[in-house]
Every structure is written in C-alpha cells, then in structure tokens.
Length: 382
Ligand code: LLP
Image (tube, rainbow, N blue to C red; front, side, top):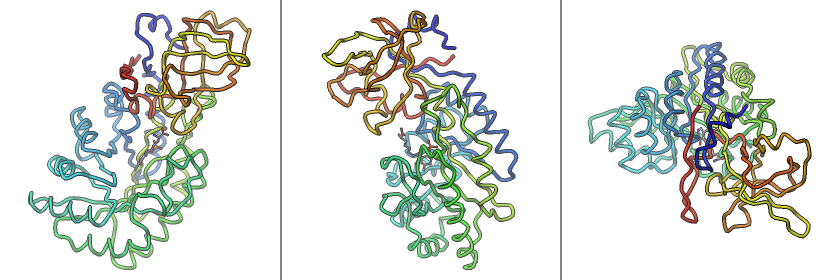
C-alpha cells in the first residue's frame, strides 16, 4: 500500500502524504457536516501547512483556523478566502492583528481583556470594525496528555466563566468591536465523546445566561480535538466524524440561525501522513537490539515531547519474511528521548530497510526543528 518504488530516489527522512486518503477524509467531513444545518468546518492549519495539502483542503471548501500572523499570511497566499479565516492565540502581536484587520478575516478568537482592548484600538486606527468571539475556558477535563489539554481553569487559554459577563459587557460597548460569538477548545487527541458532551452542556448553560442579558450570538465555535487511532491506522484511517458531529447536534442547543464552527486539525491530516525513514544500523547491545533510523526527534518530536507512540512499519519488501525480532527503535540524535519505540516486535530488520512511522500527518513536519544542524524533512504528496 506504500508506493515504495517511488520512494527509492528520495533522500530520507521525508514525509509522505497520501492524497487519496486526505481527499476521502475531507469528503467524509463534508458529507457528515452537511447533515447538520449551520455546521461550518475550519481546518486548524497548525497541524500541517504543506502547500499541496493546504490547497487540497482549500479546494474541499473548508475554512481555516490560524494561531499566528504567519499562518494567516500562509492561508491568504494559498488562496483561502479571508471570510473563512479565524484567528486564535493568547499572544497576538500588533503586527499580527493589523495583518488580520487589513485582510478583514472572519473573526478574532479573543483570549483576554487586554487583547480585546488592543484589537479595538488597532481597528479604530484603521477605521474598521473587528469581528470577535470570546474564547471561554469552560473548565472541562479533556482526559488527554497534560500538554495538549487546554480547557481547565489552570490553563493559560481563554477567559474564565466567572469573568465572562464583564468581558462580554465591555466587548458589546466597544465601538470598533462586533461581538459575534463564543469560542472554546478543550484539548486535542480526545478519543471519547464524553468531554465534548460536557462542553455542550456548559455552552447551553452559558447561552441561557447570556441571552437573559439580551445578547444574541451569531456563532459558537467549539474548536477541534477529535483524536485518531495511532495504534491501528489501517483499521481506522478516517476518524468517526459522523458520531462526532452527531454528538454536537444532539447535545448543543443551537439557536435558530446560529452557526456552529469547528476547528479540526489532527483528524483531517493525521492518518494520511507517514514519516519515511531508512534503517542506518541494527546494533546489538547486551540485552537489546536497536534499530537506528535516519529520522529522529528533530523530524518528529511527538514521542519525545508527549510520550506519543506511532506505529512503526518496516515497509521494505524483504521484511515480508514472517520472522520477527524485538527491537528498540531509535533516532540518531544525541538525546535519550530520541526513541520511537521500545521492545517493538518487528520483522527481522537490516540496514537499508525503509520504515514508515505512521499517523504522522498532523504535528509532524510542522514541528520539525534543525536541532543538531539537521535539515527539515521534505514532503512528497502522491
Ligand atoms: N483550535 C484550537 C484553538 C487549538 O488550540 C487547536 C490545537 C485546534 C483547534 C486543533 O486541535 P486538533 O483538532 O488538532 O486536536 N502538537 C500537539 C497538539 C497540539 C494541539 C494544539 N491546539 C500534538 O502533537 O499532539
């Protein structure tokens, strides 16, 4: 299923993106979202900005969710309409806000009162009105890795529910601000729907309170977070979008005409990507055998940073022999955390074999670094 003959002349490590799987995933997203009036899907660009990938996503009609001026700029250059771009982030610099104001993006997701004041001032200086959604920290536990949970009150994200009334009142009174909605994002790589259901309940309570004060909101944005099956990407190549959207349709009380926005990152691009890497050495230790790859934590940092495990497949033809052995699979970088797997049961492996580190389409290439003066891996979209 990997087009290995097309990999032979490409310098490893590189990211391989499966165009067909990406398209199928987008088709499912569009089909399932269309069943629910008012559902609008944005792609969380932070997951992967490969130009070909972005273009395929743009052509499928998704909007985008950006978290920096650089991302807004990238999306505009790829041809996303400004009217489909939302911009979040706790620390938006003035130049980033100005860039987004000049482009007239759909909405700023505002994370603090000082930020709201700065957006208002910068919009006033341009004689513009900025559409904003207030990011609320709903204090919902996403039960995911602590580095990627964002909806608890001890996180830096959003405005706490206790302070929301004050911020909404101030936002409504600012002349260069149009308050359009509320924004939420509770965390990433959620494999159960229950936290999303809790989020819906929170939003319902908040909406009741806000409406009692006479404020009507055009849209609710619930962020992203739908997880992927890293252990068995072949069994679950496309996340269960039907159940995900259905959860929101059943539990969130949208008001008539109100839009519900999603910001899906990982679930759109994760499974279509693999990091393709070559075995440099098979090293025999005293109690262990190590497979040493030419890809390391500079190419894919998720295992080192989040203790994430990606499925490791030896995709070389010789590996078809059924004999297996137990290996630790590591990279070449001078850090012990540069390890992709311990005690992996793999086909007997030799120097020169190609490995696919699976489910690496999201937060892979984009988080690569030049640590150890290594090059940023290239990509191949087929
Ligand atoms: N919206 C907001 C406001 C976000 O902060 C994020 C992700 C998303 C949407 C998209 O979430 P997704 O659908 O991809 O779960 N580097 C980490 C993930 C960090 C996610 C940050 N925020 C990883 O490799 O697991």
